[in-house]
Image 1 (tube, rainbow, N blue to C red):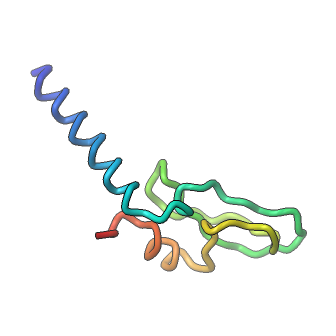
Image 2: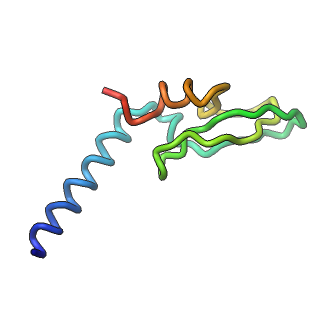
Length: 82
């Protein structure tokens, strides 16, 4: 039973590693609101959950993990990468 659990954990770990390797590096960065005071709802990819989450972008000095729509975010960073 312990061997099965260990094998499962190893397979799960490598599955996560392989998926993360296929994503652009910018998908693994945290959301950056920036110093400006705008109010732009945007989406960023949360690599821990594998989901795109909404955040408020100030309008300047953001990063590449900043998408206008959830669909754009998932297209670029989601698990459907091949």
